[in-house]
Length: 309
Image 1 (cartoon, rainbow, N blue to C red):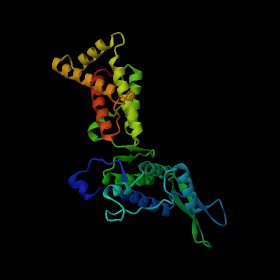
Image 2: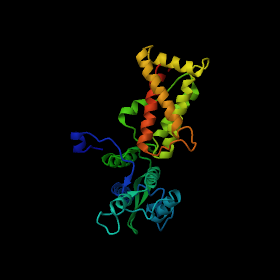
Image 3: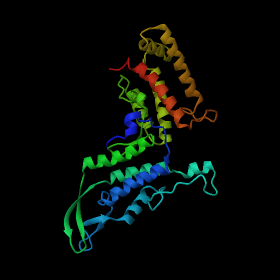
Image 4: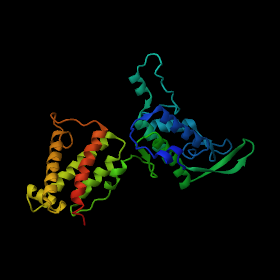
């Protein structure tokens, strides 16, 4: 899709919002309605010809709503646009309005995945003169589907929302571009270490904060595993060997990395990352999860880049 003037002149803004506003939801509905009218969801939710109930002629709204509600129980039926609550509406204060003007993001994102998975391009076949409708066939048109996904992604991008839809129809969370090079495949001689990092990288892009908390746990597990990389040495000696290699023996840099390793260990012990006793501090803020995750990943990346095959 073509870009907007403001993006060309001012550059694209970094995504920062995780909530789905009513405005964005209404934009999603507008895109949905456009493709619904043109029968892109009619293969999965068909309306049949009165003369031949094997020939698809359009979209069955009731079947669609029933399936959506069954697969996404939290979504509101019928699927429709919502009204924005004004600051001047009686009975609401400013905080109420902020809540009222957001929709359940999990339902909204599940709905997008649902649409994407049931998307097929219609083709008009023979014209039924008596009922004045076409009989339809359907094909998997990759380019049409990409265009549909692109419109949704542009809607998110223009509203600074952190989510994106991939060609596999999965919604993931965008990672700040400065960290994108860290999201790579890690290959050391320790397969368990590699797997822990891989699991963490997959979960940190999830839209669900619960999954990102698991990502934090996995990356801290990788850190602890990395400390014992040299199995023939005790943990303290193994860490010293790792830091020696990572810093090429430069004493001042090694000292700074040693301090960082101790600080990361302290954080792992004091917060609910790997341990969940009642005296451990909870982590519920999305931005803090990202901060801790990428702080740890930067440290691990610096060490492992010298160990990889």
